[in-house]
Image (cartoon, each protein chain N blue to C red):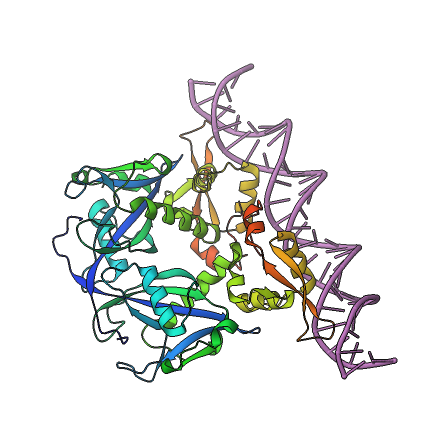
Length: 228
Length: 228
DNA sequence: GCAAAAGTGTTGTACGTACACCCATGC
DNA sequence: GCATGGGTGTACGTACAACACTTTTGC
């Protein structure tokens, strides 16, 4: 295709920024590299694209290898191509971010990879251009979460209003008024209020909610999910 | 890098969605392919990434080859990797969009490529997955133009308020009230009002404005550029 | 009965939206 | 003097932001 005569083939990698939420802070999953180069340093989970594989599939495969998880929300962030980003050989890498429910997940965390959760602000310096990838992913996550109900991917199926609020506070690094927050969320009409209460954090107990995809799709919605 | 053992190299292409504005409609620049496969069909301008080249540089090089232009605003859209997107050989392509001032440009349009402007809605069907790329680019352009002053890239240096309004109407495919529009733009305080008038379209003549990058950077600005 | 978190409503303000008339000029 | 597009201001409604007290329960 195209009319260039020089067709140079090169390595295409995929790196995943895995976001999780522990109830307080937004976290990312990092692995301590057990192989050269940069052995012992922290990095994103990644791998190479195969000849007969689509990028999204590679991202899913890689995420599965490191976390054991399937059916995870993923979104392409961008493609990074600095010449020497990988000192071994010219490698272009496409970054994806994944949103996972940290609670469901911790069990399957495969210890062979020395994977560990870090809060986004306190993460160690990463290899190559992975820090840049994280910054881009975070920016994209913020934009996306403003207009689409993706926050729920980071929470357990059933959650309290306070959990949801803390999640948005963590994503946007702001603090919100709980009355305004709850009113806004209610007005969106995309949650199902359950009869159960979560009593782990108070004597009174707080009601649990569940994201209702049907309600969401039915609703004629204003452009914004949350306006912070 | 990484611990995969199988490293398969493949072709990486770059395709550019070139946006322009003719005063009425948002346009894209397409070329009629003079080479196989798909000779005679319309496509985006594109080329292959070289071994020692960054993606952005490739996009700039390709844009320059087809338009003769330098110093153009470009933004990465995403990377497209369907297995058979190019029937010749597995090729992954990263799309960029460019914003150019259609007036300055028309002169240097190199006729050897049968390049032609099409309004976004009336463009012919494109080869490969280029239609999908255009849709993505358009979506990204809309999001970006909401929060950053990139619209000016599509206008001549000096422009009238009506031109600016028509531009945003074209991008978002809406119609706006000129009084509200002008008030909103004024409140942003990022334009310099010139003493010149453009008298081509009326006897009275309308004042010309220029985007003032300094004002823009100085201003503590609300998150939104235009709220439509 | 008290400590601890959950739950709830009102008011002011800012911003977006709707809307119509006069102005300047060239012919 | 008139036709053409350019330029301007106000009134209303909606939506966000600020704010404090009562309720429920387990101990």
